[in-house]
Length: 112
Image (cartoon, rainbow, N blue to C red; front, side, top):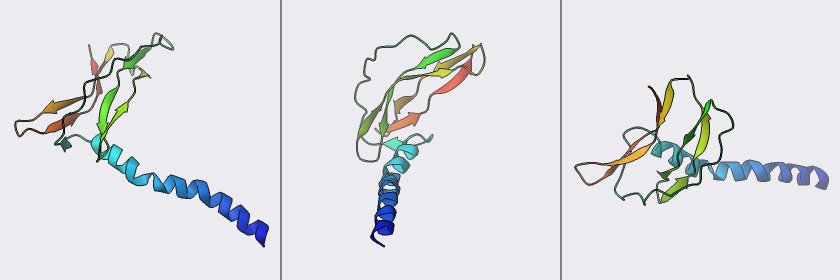
């Protein structure tokens, strides 16, 4: 019986750890929705070294700040594969509103 309890406990540890992250993940997802506004200005953008692309079909997506509901968190840049040869990436940004808040505008693909 002790062995069974230990196995169950060992199984539950990663499950409970994953569940503990849900509020944080939910806050991060909410910050990425169009129309989200924050009352605190984001920090200045970070300068990131851009590594060589994995292929000519990949484009660099610069990092940006995310609001997690309590503080700003940096999301590092990364490469994405272009959906079409004429696609280019329009970076995400936080735009000041007339009410003194900051609204998230997600990054997206556009056509040349």
